[in-house]
Image (cartoon, rainbow, N blue to C red; front, side):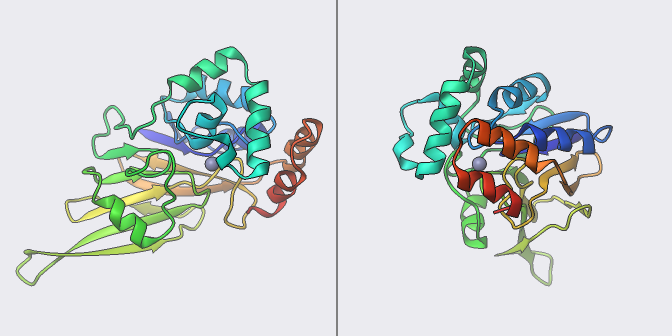
Length: 261
Ligand SMILES: [Zn+2]
């Protein structure tokens, strides 16, 4: 089975449509790592697409904030993110609101893919924690038992490889190393999962990349070949920006899409 892995769409329909077009014919199922809404101008269209097409979706911190659930105070967001959350809350249809409300707020093990775990932020803090350093990755590897965990939330594509060292007699030494790899687009990486090799994988963000590359980011996971391919695709940024202007969303959120930060 080939999986289209998408995360942090953030209501950016033009970016989502470009990803879907770019990945056409290359996947059998869709896993979505949350933050379907927030920031962007087309929350209903993006939620509708995910409802229709994703086999699995977990809740992100922006989705949670839009729902107005206890546990997240919208005042904890920066003023621009807060404005976007409140606008999204007013814009979302009751049907799409109900869908977001059904999304799990804990890590999920996908059916038929026992060695994977899927979460928005991290295994330790499924909605909030940013896995941005090898140290944080190492602490999180201790939290889950599966060979691989998919995370989003940082809006930066990344691979953290956990490797358990073997001694001369092939015995476990207990020594662990973590490699932080920044995956090159279009490079297929063999995951080589085993008791001594595990990974945390982040596909980056569809709708608001923050790694200085404004193109939409996603990944293709092949469960038979056990490979991970990081992908980037250009999308009509100006289309999203004109819709954001029409919705009177904050200027800085509009401008940042040009730069990918
Ligand atoms: Zn996000």
